[in-house]
Image (cartoon, rainbow, N blue to C red; front, side, top):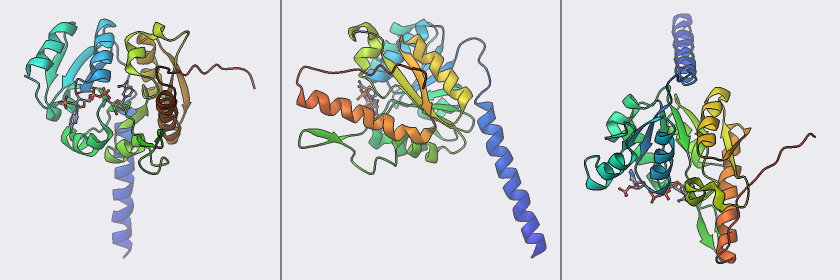
Length: 246
Ligand SMILES: NC(=O)c1ccc[n+]([C@@H]2O[C@H](COP(=O)([O-])OP(=O)(O)OC[C@H]3O[C@@H](n4cnc5c(N)ncnc54)[C@H](OP(=O)(O)O)[C@@H]3O)[C@@H](O)[C@H]2O)c1
């Protein structure tokens, strides 16, 4: 009995150490820009990849069809050493993994990516459904997509960011009449600082709003903006959060 208990304690200590080790690796400083694997090449993925490549980061597009004409064209348009690879290779090649995918694809993509220990995952995903012309959560909003991603990759560090604005604002933040805030939520301060630097590359204002548990509010912020657009055709708003002493 005592022997079994000792074994259990050793195993527990080992797994805690492994978890600490993999999440501390995520905060290692990148000296020559980040190496960012971007899962797929949709609106958000292609936009952020272009901007980050132009800012000196190394971009790896991760596609189910990396040799397809569309993906190869994007890689060639971006230049700056951008490449394309398969989902299975993504974790080996990228320190940061951006997952701009439909929320329904999260379980399948996370499984295809394999072991993401020590990686920094940036989650910009959103999910909504319309009820009476208003955007609502298809499930309990307290169970945010970002926390779902974290549960699927427990040894990675997940940061929620880039989900609260339309990609057109990422393409050109000046279409908004003033600065635009990109709120960031996550449990690792160093990881959030790295994401904040990537937000600044895009010309947006980063704001650390708290732990990953705050992701539910960021996902609600987007639903509010989508609902507003739905009942005000032709109109949209962007978030600018201003700090003041309290
Ligand atoms: N659009 C925006 O303005 C905006 C802004 C902020 C956040 N977001 C969020 O970011 C995410 C992406 O939005 P988006 O507008 O960029 O979408 P999108 O243009 O439709 O691109 C989604 C990408 O995901 C890929 N994909 C679909 N199913 C997949 C699967 N099962 N496995 C792997 N890849 C899959 C698609 O690849 P294929 O083309 O091969 O199907 C496509 O490249 C969404 O969660 C969205 O809510 C969007």
